[in-house]
Amino acid sequence: MSVREQGQPAWLTGPGGAVAWLLQRLSGFILILLLGTHLLLLHYGGDQQLAFASVTVRLKTALFIVIDTALLASGLYHGLNGLRNVVLDWGLSRRAAAALTTVLWIVGLFMTIYGATALYSFWSGRGVFGG
Amino acid sequence: MYAWLFHRVTGLILVFYIILHIFVIASVNFGGGSFDATMRLLTSKPFIVIDLLLVGVVLYHGLNGLRIIFFDLGYGIRNQRSIFWALMAVGTVIFIFAAYESSKLFFRA
Image (tube, rainbow over all chains, first blue to last red; front, top):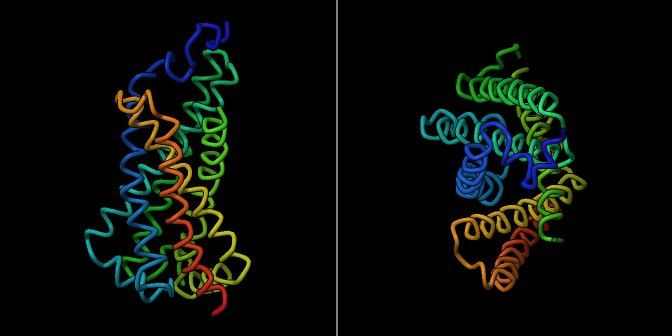
């Protein structure tokens, strides 16, 4: 039976649905603050050059590493969980839904780690893969 | 209904974009020169226009998302239509500011 047939959205009634629902609102609110700061500072603030030299200076500050890591993780969580909500509304079997959740967690964790390597490259002043 | 549909469409654009954005910024993993070359491409005229469109997508999704949070907390259920349009007005003002900033970059690029 498709989870959709139970009357409420699948993403809400499925396993962990209420927690995912709450975290989606929470991460959304956090993103309004963090993404607002990110856009203002990087594109409408002083640093419009977006060059390695200037980004490296900013990312030497611990606060920016914390902010950017939080932005990375909350952005990926919100985006991939949102994608999950959309796909689950098509009506998937429980098995397919569980597989989707696993795949999205792997993608999210990989992208968080890969994004963190970029932050590390800026912080250390040299590319982790060379250059 | 359309607000809901548009929220989903903009959300899908943004999740695709965040993955792309991480790979693009991670060009720094191949060194500062690689990052700067990538940024030179992405600050060219076509990308300034695309980025402004992206700002519009972010504004819609963020402001409508704020309305959803209010709604779920039990605020503004009766007048959600006017709240929606008030937030869109705020979004339009911010977008005009962004468009002005983008136009300066556009004519410099």
